[in-house]
Image 1 (tube, rainbow, N blue to C red):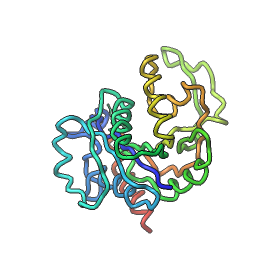
Image 2 (cartoon, rainbow, N blue to C red):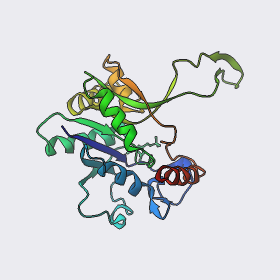
Image 3 (cartoon, rainbow, N blue to C red):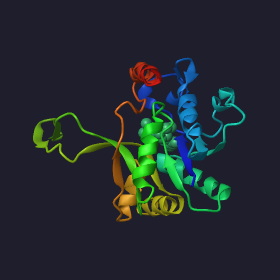
Length: 230
Ligand code: C5P
């Protein structure tokens, strides 16, 4: 059966030092978010996308998405988790089942269909769900307040968390609510599920699924998109 996607896109992207939120910067002549949405709506298993936008987002109307893209908008919140919660609430009105939901950053335009396929295959029968991730390749240090190294952390078993993050609509909605009530800092959806005592699985994804964060990331993403097409 089909799954839904949720795209939190209500962030301001302060680390980008640009004149607009990073999801609206141009990548191969199209806004970043156009690429992200294109990859999601063109996946045969994705029924539709709910996107959370800043209130009065001035850039969204000029995106001119193709009219037949199944994209529904809602308003985001102060934190990423609030944006996702709002989107889940809208999604509950769009479906009377409890579908898998793929939460995917607007700022990750290089997501491959094959990575989404791997998630659906490896998590589709899982009781909890999971996320896309990449094993750490660099040596990791723990430092004190003065940046002196205290320890070299054992790298084996450490992963970078990426998106999509795939959970059941009702379970994720409940987990985000509980984490908020407990004042837990939730920087991704999996942390809310972990707070509930659950153990989401990590599916190994491609390292080119970068989150556009710093100015140089745009050139990298342009290169990755071009490579993926060849
Ligand atoms: O800032 P960061 O790169 O962690 O943001 C990840 C994603 O979450 C981005 O797509 C951003 O637009 C979104 N976000 C949101 N609402 C917020 C903060 C971030 O939808 N309040």
